[in-house]
Amino acid sequence: MSEKLLSIIIPVLITKTNKMDIFLKRCINSIATNIDVEKYKDQFEVIVVDDKSEDATAFDELDFKTLNIKVIHNEENLNIGGARNVGLDNSVGKYIWYLDGDDFIENTAILRFFSNYEKTKDKDIQLFFTQFNSLNYQPDGSGAINTVSRLNNMQLINYAFCPVSSCCKIVRRDKAIRHPEKVYMEDVVFNFQQLD
Image 1 (cartoon, rainbow, N blue to C red):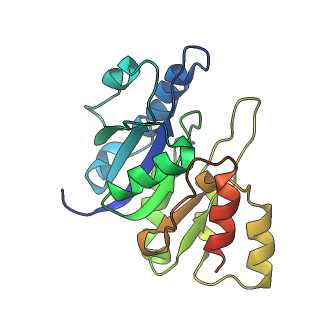
Image 2 (image 1 turned 60 degrees about the vertical axis):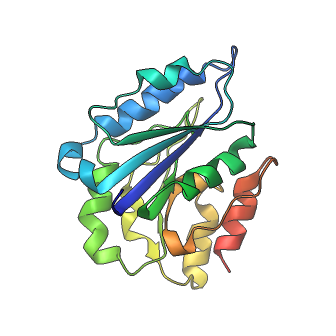
């Protein structure tokens, strides 16, 4: 597969009780219904990593027509960090955006990334502001202008106020640090490593 500008990596573990199949459909739908997604669809890929789900049938029902979706089924459960690494290893994008299966994005997030690319292509990280609700948060793309190549003091303060989640950052591939595997709160380690 030829290089894409953006790889969106979504690790998912579906169990009988967590309803992640419903959230995953909403997540994929939020990408598929983005403004101008048709215009940019050949420039990005969506990699869904099934982290040894109890029921994998939901992966067969994804919107493969609208989006370039690749589904990878892990043979063992690696937790979210390990699943993100599997996605990274199988991605071709110049930039990496991690979403969780229960996230959804605002309908201009993809457009804003591609529209701002020429202004931000020499930057390492694009920070996104998020909106929290009772289920998850919504990377809305509005932070695309807050890109950084090396963080100065003010940028570090802004970075600290950006939620600790990896999901509110788009990272250039050569700066995409691997997540620790089989641990919880792997985002904390990822974020502090990004500051190095």
